[in-house]
Length: 266
Image (cartoon, rainbow, N blue to C red):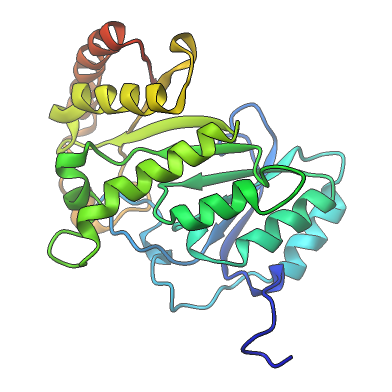
């Protein structure tokens, strides 16, 4: 079998960065976090904008990941695959399998850009979904989704971007994967916060989620790791904090009506 047709392995994963221990990337779990290279979207507020180009090779080898996990067995709960957009890479499937085989739980950060990969993650293994927990980014409501992810007038598939994300969310939820649904709120998206809560309600309802279990976390956009262009759009910190709190109050009012618990993360 030649190189062109050889099956991918975890060693093919292009890893842009590795955090040996994180207490924030998977709430309630001690995790190592892998930042995978590449993303099809260009969200203005991305705090990992330096790793978006999928043509850039990784800087961390899978061997380094294996060495870390061997040393941290019994100390770490799991491994989070983040990005970029982690599901851009097909090698994420064997990587999930290897992490599981080593005795660790698996987490994923995704915006759902590749529903076919999500379907593989939840259905390709006879033992069930390959992922235990997902931090799912609801980027924006449908009417401004393409603009938010930087696809408008740039990609013939832009008009399907929200539907692809929706399909991914539903596949995960219906497979019984634990999901944290969250949205990064920017000053531009702030007026849409109540609408985002309505979209979250629609997603949870379509997925069959019980009313009391439906939630949405608003993350306050920060300048850390973002482009200089985006950093300049943020108001002065104290003013942005006041704006964020006011938007949260409005969003929570909508959440009370549609049955979604709205939380905040600075």
